[in-house]
Length: 146
Image (cartoon, rainbow, N blue to C red; front, side, top):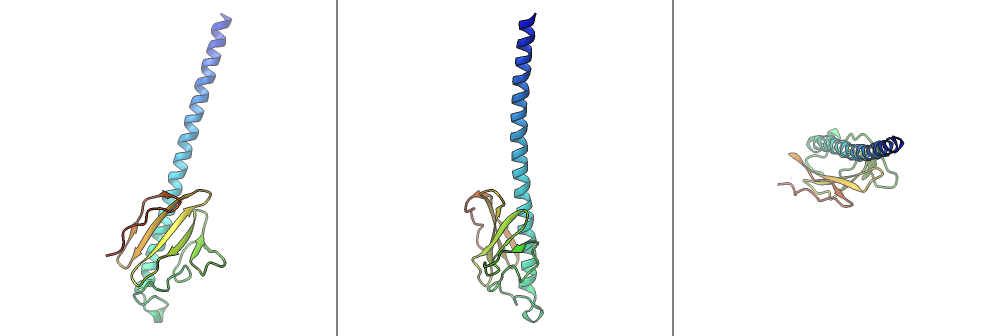
């Protein structure tokens, strides 16, 4: 009878260990998906604010239908501008965001998740926003504006 109880204890210990590992993996992937969603929401928010900047006349503090001089000080973005970045880099609790590729009609915002190598990009156009897919390191850039 003692051997059966010992085998039962060992079996229960193994099952509990496997269940713990599965739970940790599930939690980790859910946390990463939540961070990607938060960065996506920040990019959408920044894109909407930048489109408002684009449409607003220069006399009212806008871009006058151009993104040529866009930076994080030109539109409302929930984050802290990184010193020495020419106002092109901002960070918040979700990620670090960088503006690049400014032209008259578009620019790119890339968000790199804090404590991770996962990044996500969005191309801001005058009439919309094109979201890219998450990637490790340099994410795939969304298509150019029409």
